[in-house]
Image (cartoon, rainbow, N blue to C red):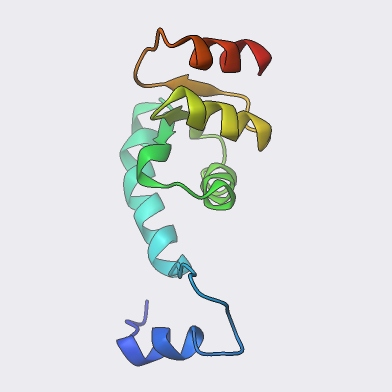
Length: 112
């Protein structure tokens, strides 16, 4: 994997390529990190649940789920609101990390 310097990223965000704000993801590094995380999961015969708290981009969550080839199953969400949002985005295996008793959160869960 070739290291990229500041000028490379700056050029990628220069007009007219992308409107700001924008996020850049080094897919080679993401793939390497995913493999590093999945290696012990694969060896254990278990699966991994991705924590959305660390990755708040639905398209990247989908990408990682697909690239894990079944080793990553489901998403652990930080809040009920986040779980509801991800359900609207098509995710269907969601775990809420922190329980809630808020009426608005419970209503949101009941609707999704």
